[in-house]
Image (cartoon, rainbow, N blue to C red):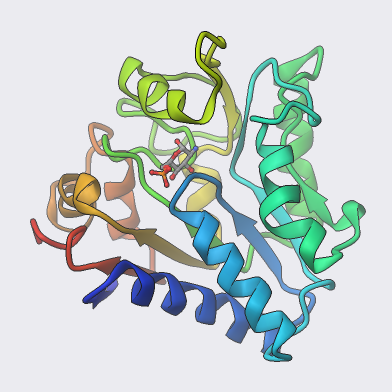
Length: 241
Ligand code: GLP
């Protein structure tokens, strides 16, 4: 695992965006695995700027997102479908047929999970998987105790993750407690992985991921077994390394 520590979160974000842009400059039709969450918002803004500056194309890639809340339609303002359109896809003008997220409102979620895995395989697998990390070490929505070999499936969110997500929902609005997420085995199949962590709230998870024992108690720790991982973080997130 290559670990890059930047003094500021802005530096870490820019470094992550540049890695994506470098791949797209070399291979505009690359298959990207994309993530959501507050950490990724400035990354996507920086990537949009890099595309506008002509560093790479931003309309030829194919993408697969990690996860989606169960029960939210693609048009729900807090759905990850909506997040991706708002923060990346609309600005880049990437054709909708090239972007994929699991359908959290599918009538048969197990069938949807299988379809999602099949679509990733049909695209030739993921070239670069972008990851954030939950404060409890989750990746995607693979919460602690997730099978390290898991594939796309429904997961129940922990109380702490539901509470962390509450900030994105209106006061009094129900926060989803289930998600359809790529499994840890799905993530591990990506050819390259780029994990970005910023802020002191991620320090413990980052240390567990990079230096802790490989254990389902910290799902991100399995990344120690992946041959091509770059961890980009700011000084605050690296504090416990
Ligand atoms: C959610 C997402 C993860 C993300 C995590 C951290 O759980 N499913 O992909 O890494 O939030 O989010 P944030 O960047 O807002 O801290």
